[in-house]
Amino acid sequence: MHRTGDLVMGNWFQKARRLQQLPPYLFAEIDRKKNEAIRAGKDVINLGVGDPDRPTPEPIVRAVQKHVENPAFHRYALDQGAPEFRAAVAEWFARRYGVQLDPEREVLALIGSKEGIAHLPLGVVNPGDVVLVPDPAYPVYATFSGFAGGEVHRLPLLEENGFLPDLDAVHERLWERCKLVYLNYPNNPTTAVATEEFYRRIVELAHRYEFVIAQDAAYAEVFYDRPPLSILQIEGARDVAIEFHSFSKTFNMTGWRLAFAVGAADVVAALAQVKANCDSGVFTAIQFAGIDALRQYDELVPPIRSVYRERRDALVAGLRALGWQVEAPEATFYVWVRTPDRSSSTEFATRLLEQASIVVTPGVGFGRHGEGYIRMALTVPTERIKEAIDRLRRL
Image (tube, rainbow, N blue to C red; front, side, top):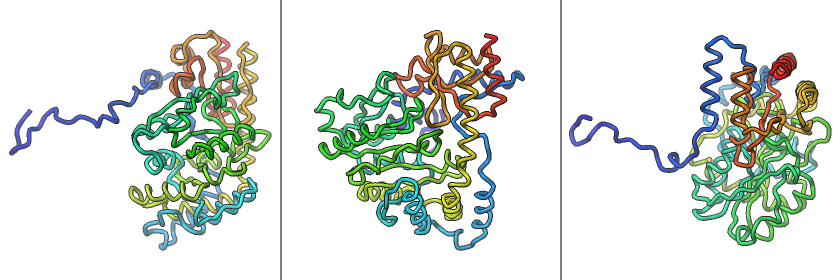
């Protein structure tokens, strides 16, 4: 420690309590061992990462190359998104879901859906309000609800309930204090798809107890047979629900950071006000490339789905041949699997890494009710999936 003027320098810095209260990073040890294996020259097959390995479709790449040359797009973007982008979203949403949106009031451009999901509690939650969060789930829901001062309560997603929360099990006192409920269907990590009946029930409860529904639909376009519903197709949902859609998984555009929120105008406005005070919108050239992507959706997206279908079928068939009990997912590019020996998810994931150089994600990393499961991502080529099955067979 030394003194500079009146300022004492040394070990004076401490992170804010909100960061200190975050749970430890549960994957840290596996990440360390994965990196050690790579440095040791081992051939690691990474089924843990939820990041598409295929490039963004060439027409979208060409589109952004064209738009980035437009000097009008080199200035600050409009906070809510370019009018042309919002209009294109509304047009696509009408084609895809049959829902007519007001692009001025019910559509908001986002710098990736994670950003919007994280900022939402700052616009709708007051300290002490209850926020209901699924478990297992994407950690951002609980983290930023806590940052906003919300009181987080978990909704268990159990296999016997089709990984849908049991709404009847929530005490009425919680509903009365509830301000925000997070949903995520198709679901990461469980791959479950919500039913129309479930959506109708949660919308009914939102009207009765006056809370906001935040439905994370990042995987809505990664499906294999029946297209998933939008919650906004349910009568009354547009008064209480905001839905987040992403270009990341749909068009292999994770690095581009482009998404949109649609739904209840007052909630969209609250999120837009938060964003206006902390960011300057999405680079306009990327928004215009997003317009091109939406208009070519019918040509660009089915081939992406076909790749994941082939990989899904290879992984599920391979695991079943090993005697594992596994359901083929209806949507997402994940497979959610019980650990076959009933060991903990972290122990099992560690063993796969150490003995087979295969990385998977321990289910407990998504919450207490993810214990006993692992998540395997379909973000490696089919040949690598078959190699992973061969390694598992030799264990």
